[in-house]
Image (cartoon, rainbow, N blue to C red):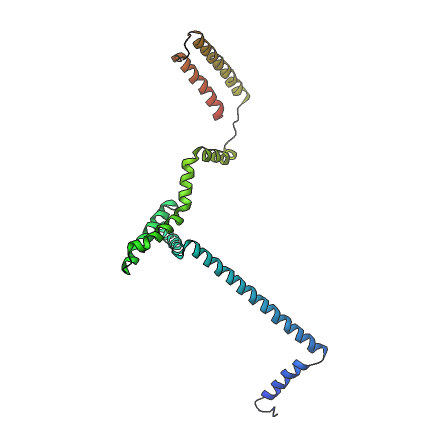
Length: 226
């Protein structure tokens, strides 16, 4: 072997010597190199597994709802951002305008390739229903459970409402007013019941006025006026 030629023979010999070097230093170097290769292979394997899982998830979603639905949702988001930037109110307004625009482009594109409306309309309808499903669910809940939504709203806002604070003098005055008007109403109702033997009783204007006065007192207590 002529190691003088371009120095390649010397480099080859050095590499071979490092591989068969029986010294402890050579063995340590080989173990370190093997450990690095093993870790690199593990990293590559983990990366490939992550990519495979991601692609499997995409494939599952696409198979479940259709890739058209995914594209529709992506383009609606993009259009919504664009419409919001030119003044269309954000939220439901820009979302619905964007959906209408994307649907129009979908129809125009299908028409440009001479596709029959009946062939793509079922998938288009399905995709729109899936994209609109959150808004539809909220609208149904708002119709069916208005009291529930109001209760939830009150529960969420109640910690932020101001405390009802009265001066002692003001509260004593309202208490006296409440007792006087509640006793007056109690007397009016007793009088109404004692004045007739009919099963149905029509309240007089005086009694109704007494109810309004008591309600006014309760409103003051609820509002927390000083």
